[in-house]
Amino acid sequence: MMRPTLAHNYPRTGFPLEVSSPLGQGRVNQLGGVFINGRPLPNHIRHQIVEMALHGVRPCVISRQLRVSHGCVSKILCRYQETGSLRPGAIGGSKSKQGAAAEGETRIEEYKRDNPEGSISRIVRCTFGGKLEEEDEEEEEEEEEEVESKELEESERRAKHSIEGILGDRCKRASP
DNA sequence: ATCGTTACGGTTGAA
DNA sequence: CTTTCAACCGTAACG
Image (cartoon, rainbow, N blue to C red; front, side, top):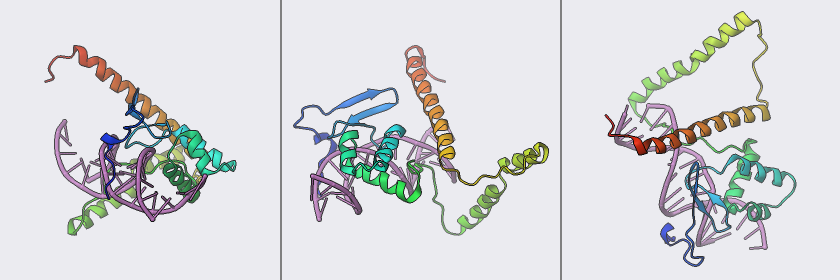
């Protein structure tokens, strides 16, 4: 199928909009919403989508009001319904490896997975702390919030790093 | 008018 | 350290 290329995307409006933001290259979709190509929608938007749906707002209205494509609203709502999470899937990383070599790798991997440092420190903590009833059933909101705040820290750290990189660029001499 | 699905160009991050 | 590459992203368009 011949689909239009990105270069010819917005010929009639006149503005092939680009929006520069602290965290990357923003674009504007047909509904006037801002998004970053290749990256998940911001968490607060995802929250709003789910929240509105929970209040009985129809997906098409959510799409128009939040200026998010209906395909995306559909996907996020679908995922929420089957996983109970509003978070995007895990991006990046590696999986590959196959054949005979993979089996050895898998065994090592399993060993690592079963004996992470964390489990050792948990055992130590439990033994000495006397708090043995700590193991958690997945408590939904609590876990989400924890991940969220971790993410926030991460993105802040990244933004800062990139700003420093830009500023540093001005006075930086040739790297070693 | 709605909404499920998917080609596309994109970013990410463990190996 | 750099490179590879399969995972996911949202939009736009089709059905």
